[in-house]
Length: 224
Image 1 (cartoon, helix red, strand yellow):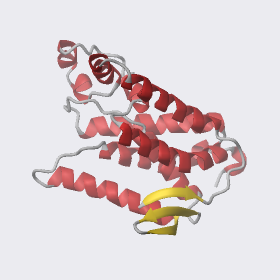
Image 2 (cartoon, helix red, strand yellow):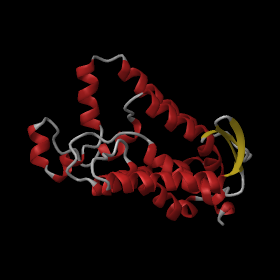
Image 3 (cartoon, helix red, strand yellow):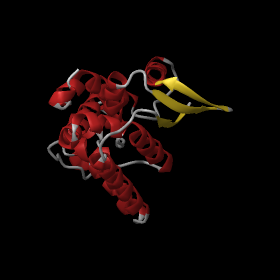
């Protein structure tokens, strides 16, 4: 199911949502015009490479000195390919504006970054010896989806489900999204020969963080 839009009204201009999207898109586009060697190096330096923190000597040997965990933050603004950024920004466009509306701009920014950092931490904890970079805004966006799930459970999400367009409750669409994440985690963990091709633990970690924390970031007049 591909979401097209939602029906929840937004009463303010989502400047933070738009700004985060612009930053991610600009960084991605600029990196497409860089020499491959340079973009490859930047992905490894500013993406979160788990083994860099589990084994600092390994990181030093491969030109990645300890950075004070900076990449847990910078990795949120990097994306691996066009499909990666398109899907992330599309989900951001549909769901984040309403969450920003309920939290206010600065609280939403703090919530987004907190969920992203906790999601990256969960991904690191799940595979601390991984030697490839983990990048993408997915974990932070998963936190946004969790907030939307609880704030707008019965708003409709318009989805394209080949060959028809359906209007489904947000609680159904996002509930299915969580089930798919758990399915991919289970198969990549317990089924021999299946490898993870995405940061599924970051998705779940971000969603859990968002589900727990969202109410602490709501504006005082919005607390539920």
